[in-house]
Image (cartoon, rainbow, N blue to C red; front, side, top):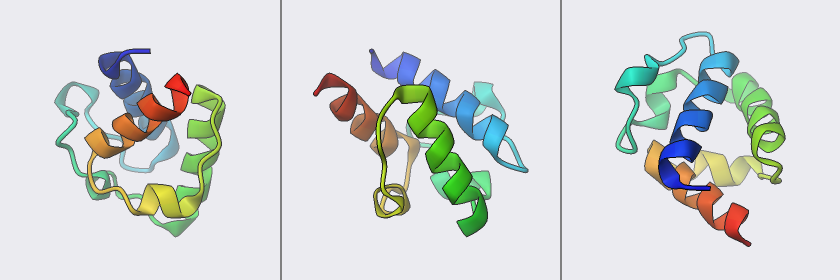
Length: 82
């Protein structure tokens, strides 16, 4: 799976999981994950939703260590390739 597709699918998952969904057209790899308004309660749901969408397992620490969408895209790209 290529980076643009991962970013697109990830943006859709975040939009469906958060109370302040992002404007999908404005989301880039430089977009801050914090800008989505993800709190600790939403984080658990978001991790589950990402795992379901991409068929990977994520630890909360992995997601909280990432600051921008590009970091998460790179992480998923690596996980999906392996």
